[in-house]
Amino acid sequence: MSNLDIKNLTLMLLIVILLWSTNFDACNARRGRHYSRPLSASLLKKKSKGHGYHSHNHHHSSKPKPKPHSPTKPSPDVDTPSPLPPPIQKAPYYKRSPPKAKSPPNPTPIVEVPSPEPKGSNIFSVLDYGAKGDGTSDDTKAFQDAWASACKVESSTMLIPSGYQFLVGPISFSGPYCQRNIIFQLDGTIVAPTSPNAWKSNLMWWMDFTKLVGITIQGKGVIDGSGSVWWTDAPYDESEDHELEMIIPLNDTILEKPPMPVRSELSGKMPSVKPTALRFYGSINVTVTGITLQNSPQCHLKFDNCNGVLVYSVTVSSPGDSPNTDGIHLQNSKDVLIHSSSLACGDDCISIQTGCSNVYIHSVNCGPGHGISIGSLGRYNSKACVSNVTVRDVNMHGTMTGVRIKTWQGGSGSVKGVTFSNIQVNEVQLPIVIDQYYCDKSTCKNQTTAVAVSGVTFQNIKGTYTVKPVHLACSDELPCTDISLNTIQLKPLQERYHLYDPYCWNSYGELMAPIAPPLGNFQIGKPLKSKVQIDVDIC
Ligand SMILES: *[C@@H]1O[C@H](CO)[C@@H](O)[C@H](O)[C@H]1NC(C)=O
Ligand SMILES: *[C@@H]1O[C@H](CO)[C@@H](O)[C@H](O)[C@H]1NC(C)=O
Ligand SMILES: *[C@@H]1O[C@H](CO)[C@@H](O)[C@H](O)[C@H]1NC(C)=O
Ligand SMILES: *[C@@H]1O[C@H](CO)[C@@H](O)[C@H](O)[C@H]1NC(C)=O
Image (cartoon, rainbow, N blue to C red; front, side, top):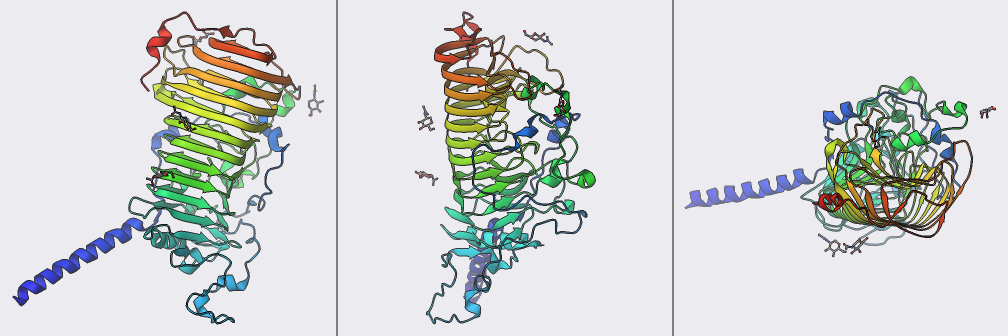
């Protein structure tokens, strides 16, 4: 009898321990372990090429929010861990010391609230988990531990307080066993390490949030990717923009490379794959608001396989000549709303990739950068599907392209239901682009399939261009259909490039005046070929 009791007790204990430990493990934030497929690195390897074209894009003609602090300065010695600026203004002492360590002057019972931030049982400050916030100590472990705690509590807050600069290495905030609706309250600054040792080979993400339901990053804080140590690394043009080929300077001297932000003593030491600063994967109801993302090694903010994405009042800030630094990258994501944000970077301000639908973007400043792009789609004969995208009330200044759809020959699938409206362009090289011949510099063969493009409206697009106002290069096999241009008023501004007339090829649809300059070869109506109807598509 007592034997049986003991057995039962042991069993119960075992179950309890098991449950507790799985839960604990699952909630732990892990060091990033997301290796890239080796494929991507080798496939993207190409020879480098001059890239001075868009260096003049540095100036902002509008005024985005002031940047919290200047980009990370180079360190003469990579191995000393202090290429970072001193911590931004230290917080008052009382914020640093845990409330319970001292009795506050005002003897408030039970819950002491000496800090301006709300404190409660569901707030997990990284300072309470040992974070130093001095910009040089490695605070990764503290972030992992704070997350492990926050993960267990529904609607908890992980607090990264203001007045500190936290050095945090690659980190993964996951995942499937975390409670819902966690808030990542970012008021301080998080900086990425610049030592190659901190980056195991080929990590694709610096901060990775996966498989969460209801995750919010908010606050007035900064995520600084310390990207300049990566930007110099050689194969500069791993996905250099095809449209650069259209931009021919008047004066060859401006073809020379501009000095890069950091000189080459650091080159070659960082892994060849550059990480995205902040990435969300497989999550539902993701919100990012208030924060600034700057100087990412590569893309700043990426959403992959997410449903329900809200981004607003976000600032992205990187130099116009920082390579491949997309602002916001969307892939396989649905129901996305991005608004009231300022994006300055070295590649697409917003890039919309395959698998995206119901995307609404409005009230965004873009520049410098390569504009707002759908694609590139259909590379390596892949199928791509993008639908229902609206982009309106956007200011572009000094960007390479304005609004653009780019697809590779040989792909399949479709882009349909796209509206670009109320786009103000200032000194934009190529304001309106559909390019179905997207290609890297290796020669691309003509192929018979294409990602179909239909139902695209360009409405009320005004301002100045410096190379070519409209470039609609549609597939020979699969012309673009239902293309509508309505109220296009673009004025040339000869700066330093050859100016071109508008270009239209196999582009069908309607024009509504005024259209300036006029689009000679635009085809009114529908193509005669019936092939179009057969191939449009399967998405
Ligand atoms: C080319 O640009 C350089 C520097 O901007 C200038 O000194 C030179 O006169 C220009 N040459 C021509 C032909 O415009
Ligand atoms: C996501 O947010 C929407 C709108 O707030 C809500 O209706 C939905 O239930 C949320 N989804 C989940 C899985 O929590
Ligand atoms: C298109 O997307 C918007 C959000 O941008 C959504 O409100 C609308 O319902 C979508 N339309 C269709 C047909 O799905
Ligand atoms: C591909 O097609 C274009 C347009 O039809 C033609 O100008 C070009 O020469 C072709 N290129 C090749 C490599 O066949």
